[in-house]
Length: 296
Image (cartoon, rainbow, N blue to C red):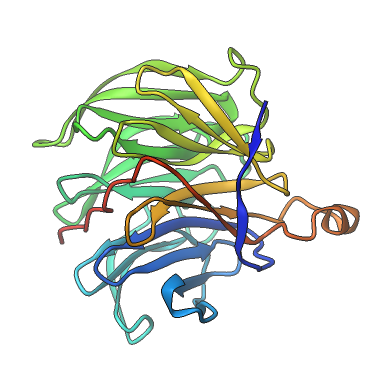
């Protein structure tokens, strides 16, 4: 049974909030509204509203880089220099975009060695036409194909495992990982939501310093916590059905943030879940890990 624990951190009505990333250096949480092409920046300690910067395309995910962010816009990945919006530099094109009729970028994360990993999402969200890539030497190297909705990227604290999910399968896989080379082994079934009788599908995730994997269950109205051996430990409920991704932040990295969505709610659903689309937070006992910075 899911425990209650999340509070509203910022009351918003995001269409598809995603990709929260905490900057230790700036004590700032960044996240996106994919469908609206918006990046948010918020300093919780400042007691001010988040700043929002809009772009001309959907933004699947973001990652920290030196003096800025990498943003995986639908047509390609760009470097955005601080202050955000002051300068945009193209990094690499999306090989699946096909002039706006193909797959956009979705979930992504920087690995401990500074490589950006980013997956795509099938345009119809039903056929396995998407791919998981690793950005190396200015090009996107395909690492796993036959994906429908790439999600759940995370790395174990000891750098031995890469976690990833194709959301519709309701299974989270893990891969033996070599941080020195970026090499990944064959997929191993690690968590099956059916086996734990958990609702929804696995979406964005993060790993804490003890190796626990925290995953937003889209459509399940909760965030689930799994031990390093794949055991389900606990779930924490939210007052809306579609949490999307979690991130650890705060000065001690013990605040768990989670983004949410409204995109699949009709008028009645919005009335039933008035806090949907907001940013939520919860204090936890085990701190997260500092988010790595992409080396370009």
